[in-house]
Length: 437
Image 1 (cartoon, rainbow, N blue to C red):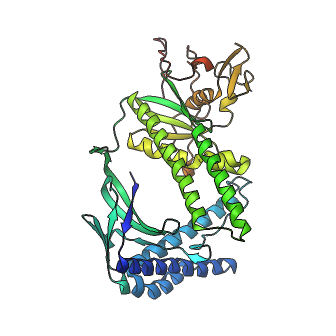
Image 2: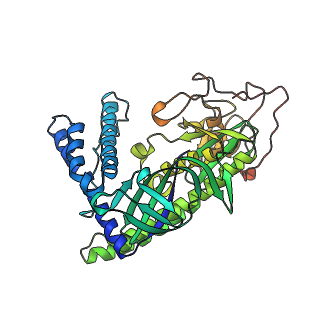
Image 3: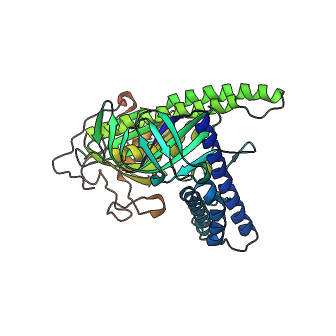
């Protein structure tokens, strides 16, 4: 299990001078090698990775050390190879038509100035109490800085990324852990990942009004409120809009204060998502769920991108956090296509049921109304899974079209109506019914 721990660096005058020099040279190295490779690409000569690597390795090795130079050059090479992979996928027609533009790696700049960052290889730094010691930095020598914060992970440490936040005027260190064995929860260390308490499967539908709608195969359901994200987003949208109007009067486009406002917005959104996802995954773990199938809104930003599903929802971060937190609890996550799941009747299939106002679904055959998000979560639970290596999605042993049909198996889905949608409705299937996932 891979994770990152972030701490704030407390630097004195001498340490900050060295850090600025180190990070400025690292950023400059990225920009120079990136420009050289971009020029080769645009001139259609083909990028000579070995020649450009050797050229800039020899140039920067004496300045920032061989290990740091090598790490940055290899990361730039990896970024270019990922770009070529996307181009190949586009030529093969495996990218959506809406993704018309695939851009090469960008430059390390912001508002016309180089961003300050560097990456230290794991054998070129060490932790000593409340200090981080960087060594093997070429002409810069070594740097010793104190840090503020709790390192809440134990395991095998990886690279150390140091960056300067211009909006806050502070230095931060991202400590990567390639293999996490323990995590601090409260005042105690807990081994991770945990073992599942059961073998149940749950379907999860992600959305805006309901951040998560959960349907467990034993009939338990749960709704996670997503409306506070709307309040956060529209609050900051109004404040930022007023402040930008004031800046425009003076002919300015941006400022440090504006950057801090965006930062606070992102922090509040992430905090809410982190809290709610952890609550949901912990609940699933406690009731014995070992696998969840999450409906993935494929290409929604390209096909139907708007303020709600890009800025309010931040579904990409939500899906990532679901996967990361579930991994800590030993729960396997499988992503499935959620298209049509909220408009398909779980009792009578296609052709029965319509979406009506306020996120409700009506079964026209029985003339009953249900929460559309729980309908979607139920259908996601039963959706067939096909392998999709690019997204890391694994199959579940079923061939396409072999999703379990509860009606045929002799029981109906236990979906609460809007009057009882607060969501913890127990359900016991008939003795003859067995769910085989």
